[in-house]
Length: 287
Image (cartoon, rainbow, N blue to C red; front, side, top):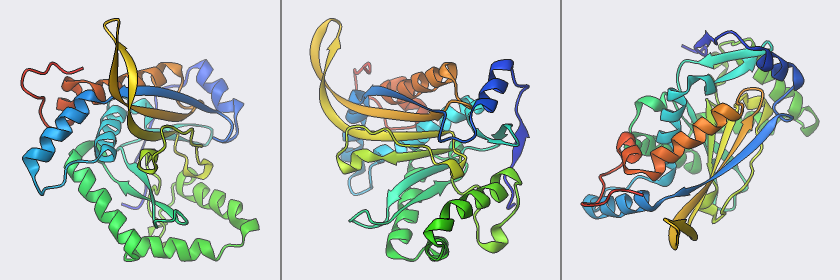
């Protein structure tokens, strides 16, 4: 069970072969996209859930976003993979890597992984993320402590070589390193970072080469902005979602499909129903 479950991708077309040969690592082919999500329907449902749940925690934006991203990647499996031996390999499941600050000062950064996220509800994702975060912050997570101790002993001039070599063993050769306390597929299918929790509206985050993750999503803070609805000026809660994509892996066609589906999931009552996020207010037709 320590190995990643790979399956072959469809035959590569000419453009994809050229793209794969054009860049050597994911530091070169980064392409960025940003969409402004109208969170009106989300906010209405969340307020209703707060009242209905009482003391029971209401799902966080990170958990809802995680569920939406997992379903999106399950709908478009072409986005769920990595590059090894110069070609594309697809993952069999959607694993989320949600970045988190370990301490209040932000001196230590880490992340939690949600495996098979496409099979989990919003509440299950939230519970798993919060439980893992709590263990890491309290110093009770043995995996995080081992990684921190191991990487802390590596001299800075050797760090890049160690990271690249470990990535080569895990992803390219697909070796089972769990007996050495190296987790299987440690960074998953996609990275999500909630920069909104820091009060940031948007940011263009870099891909991390050794992670082999072709997609990183930065979720901004929800803030009121001026919008135009039916030709009239209005105010709506807006969340900026910035995607950093590996252009060898994700082209404009699938980038657009991905963003449109996320808009559907997060902006409309139909999409929020598909996510399993609360119920629409009576007589509310959504956005």
